[in-house]
Length: 71
Image (tube, rainbow, N blue to C red; front, side, top):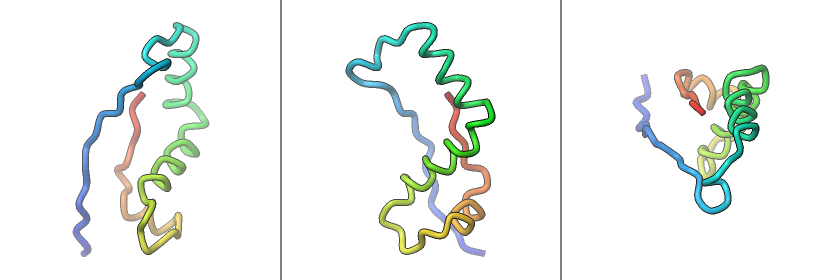
């Protein structure tokens, strides 16, 4: 079994995103919980995997099965 270092992080908006309308907030929440979530999660994990020796999406997703994004 391979032990991988993991990190819990909180990302907060900066600049113009600090003041979102109620409609924009709702759209973000829907992205974080609706049918688009799986794609959003895969894209975020791919970005966080930048610089890794592997770019095999299946391998990365299997390595971090509990990876999630809460909006």
